[in-house]
Length: 324
Ligand code: PMV
Image (cartoon, rainbow, N blue to C red; front, top):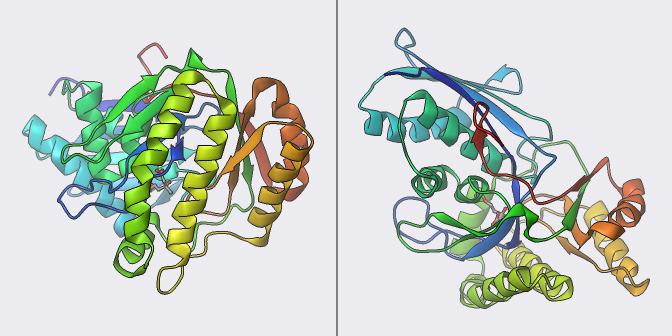
């Protein structure tokens, strides 16, 4: 093995057209197509060191050694790459986010994208980005999209990998992130999706409707049409949450603050500012707007949030020794 150690960084992505639910085939394949923006300004940094003296993988997240499901998911991804590299060496994985973990700010997307990139490099494997995206998808479907920068699509085919739609310089869009808590979300997206699939009476309607919205989002991105994008992105988020709310027991990711932020975005629109929200598996609200309106939007959201961050389309997962 030539390289034994590597460090990568990756950024979360925000889905404009949401994936929610998995197809009943092996390998964590989404039931709905999605379109996302990889964001600059939020970063996961992950180092992977393969060491023949280790008896099992070690996963240190945010300074704490982690066991249980998070470690199992890391080991599963590493097992796939170990099989490619024909090695049994265990690894020490050290990962840090500069934003709240597991709270709906897509830390699993950036986390597994950075892990896949760093582990591949450390093992000396040469996988292209599409193959790497497929590896990341099996760990976390949204992570498949964070391999790429800019605007990215992910389909629902058996061997789905994300595909770049447009680069980060395609559009001077801003996403103002309004984080309403630093705590972890009450239910993981994997558990919530499965409960939605098996118990929400709206699940079939969601899956049937989502491809049309994803198409609309894709076209709006390519046309740089903010109003068209915003209307479709809000519809995708609201339909995803409506479907989850209707599960048994209902999945409620929102807090009072989430609703106040939605109201604020709608009142900004009444004042003539083109601002549109999206919400993932957590209470935080992310607002799409033009670069010229970002500071006005951020100032309006700030009193309702524990933290606001103005982000823009950013780069895909990269090892630290590659030009970014
Ligand atoms: O891939 P996961 O388990 O992080 O789930 C992502 C689900 C959403 O963020 C709500 C939607 C999406 O497409 O990213």
